[in-house]
Length: 558
Image 1: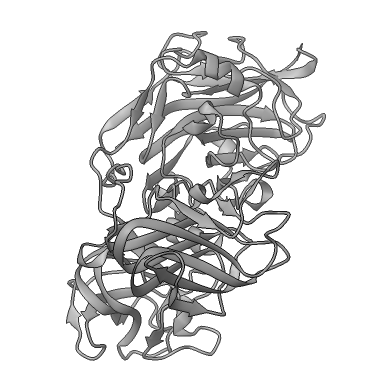
Image 2: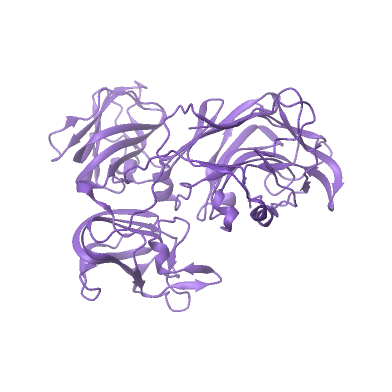
């Protein structure tokens, strides 16, 4: 839920004692590693509308900037130079309203002779994912028909993804390393060297807060044997390097530069490099601010070395997903509490300035005999509070990684009411604190204005009021039932209201503009109705009690 934020209450300790049999649903098979290879690469176009919409804006990882072409009926093109041949897997586009109704994706090894990699495609306003197979250094969009004849073509983002070329694999996973210093104190516990190589996007290495806020600062990994390095991926904390080198060495003593920059910009940087060595080092020479250096991930790809096999990632579902893996239709008789085979009640005092007590009382959560769950906020005293409500989740019953998670809900209207349908990272149950476990808010509505809703993600670098999400205007949601859903895979999340996309969170864009993407692991589902708090504001004399949030069903598909 948004605002300060997390609503765990006293649930963590209680649930750790309760956890029994539950099931985790993932996609099944593992997939090859895939990475964005176009970001920050040289990008050119047939034309630009004006100097404020250059070709480079389409590959800068910033969804607030865009490329737009001249307003011309002539075909236009946009292309990116990847720097070296890459095994292309897909192209992801984020169109403005001036999209192409006819275009092809083309590939080239030399930048002059292009071959169609797709048939003629039709764009759409918003996100579009296009499977592409081929090896190329240059990728071009050949645009031949406009959706808006009075304008040209316009793209917020043009992203090219590739698998590791020539059989390249991740070499640095769980390998040992060393650094100029490391932090392990109350403020970062522990931010030690192994955290940069553990493939956990919620952990990080940082230089010491007492001796490490100086230049230079460095960290290296021992790959275990000589390796041929082709790519380095750095996911920075806000304490990033504006100037740094990537170096290789046979002995961790004599170093050779294979990459150097004085224009580092933090977030995620994907570096296509060429070098040979057993050791790979990031050597920082200028910091972004007064602090030291800190990396969430330092991943090295190539061949050779002595790699450890990382955990297999489940396969992405194919949407529309049709395999039902969890559901509750709430078809029990009137006054029945939700099934404890599917749901855990989460009593306690909430966070975020809310004024209710979350009760296990059946008056606060029961079926109505008409196919609905009723979560009811009541004006009644309990545990030192003047109001009660209910919060329930699937924490020790059901976890899911990837798929379509949806619910059909009718929300209440009234100042200070705050209904929500959301998910928490399941590692919260084993001690990882919020927001490091991740939070996915599929739906939040504030009772003071039920004609708008929110869908938001929360993580270490974007949370609370700074969460990554979207507020969207709509009809008065309190007048009828509506279906909220998220379609979630390893590439991102599409949030939908009544089948229409209201927000798309691209993993690559988040990593490039906000911080680590921490949503590639199991989550559990939560329903609740809060009263008052920092986000919805206070209740007043007009707020109706009892207030009811009706849930027709909750379903999860893969």
